[in-house]
Image 1 (cartoon, rainbow over the protein chains, first blue to last red):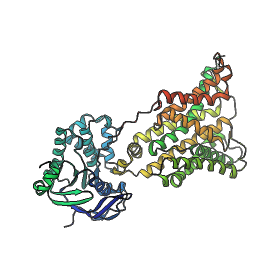
Image 2 (cartoon, each protein chain N blue to C red):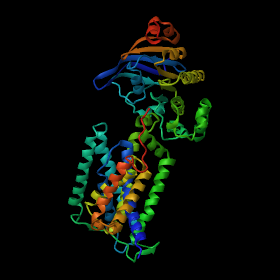
Image 3 (cartoon, helix red, strand yellow):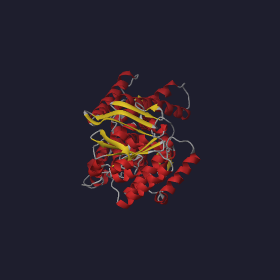
Image 4 (tube, rainbow over the protein chains, first blue to last red):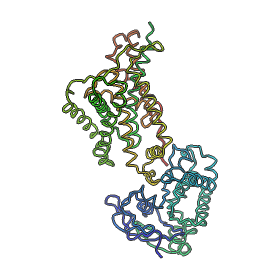
Length: 238
Length: 309
């Protein structure tokens, strides 16, 4: 069977500096796949290339049977690839509801959009309580919830989450990870980029460890969680 | 005779003109952080477009019926020039250092002025613009020229349409999103290139409406008219808080009224007798700009730019 997302020998550069130096991995429908690694490993660059914000130097990206390279970012969403970017990037001067509506920018089914907004409020009740508030007034964790809810509004086949736990309190981080587990249980396919390797690997079916632009280790989430080099490098064990 | 209502009316009419032009500066700046210094010339081209349509009409055609056609002609010319400028002059420079598009804008401004001067028939001098004849209408203690009713109606109508577009339509929402965070807007599926063209087009269309108002008010249009009007409208946009569409109109009206009041009353202020009258109005307009920038650098309705998370 072919995977939902297939990345082959992807290389991406900023000017002369190559940030991603030939990586390959795939995501099957229904799976949670995680990319872990330190700052500068190329994880965010990979996601930004998949969603079309960056152009690759070379390599092949196949999504849902179609090549993605060369398609502009605003058309990739329509194919079913949603990206919740690093640093959340909610629209600060629009309300929560308006942010969610923008997530459904390309959809025309008004009634279904309304239903999905309600679903986002069920998933994150705090957003429902503050729906008329400007998104910029939310706390970091609440903004993360909004960014995830907004990405889900396009009814994606694949949801890409970039550092959803970044800068959050431990309690908020747990909440977010719990939500990701819930989404997984509902059958959402997720590509998760995280620095919090422990949390990410516990959730993931597949994991890939990235170091300076390369995948250095791959395996199931459980395997990597018990791998000695991973434990030393990313889980803070001596 | 109390001349205050008259001065206020003059100021409002002038301010409506500034405000309509200022919308174009503020929308473009809000989305691509570019000061489109050719916008004054886009306004000027709109005036000539409207005049051309009028000259095409048969003699004796009613001016009232001609005005809508003139607006259409002006809007077509301004929008064509504005969107072509975006496509061929500014878009290739996106991502270039800020100075490059700025210099391009100044170059474009000179090009447009000279092109009209050279190729528009008899444009080396100001060309007469059709006038509504008849006596001024006396209301609220002010005499208002018949032609000025155009701006009194058109400016609020334009603002209502713009408010509706930005807040109620999908593409208007997309415009707000693009202004706040262009990359993330793309992730929502928003074609940001098209939104940018839209911002240039709306700004140009409003400038053309202002140009029809200018022609009806002054009785003439000329290839140089975009320079000082553009500068004043830019001032109005900064005054109101650049990037804020309501601020642009407010800034225009504040500027217009301030100019009119300074013109009318400065010579009554002891010690300032020689600084009143029309010759000094530009001085007072720009003094007001400096004052606002010192006391409230973000402009009247501008928001302080918060750090992005």
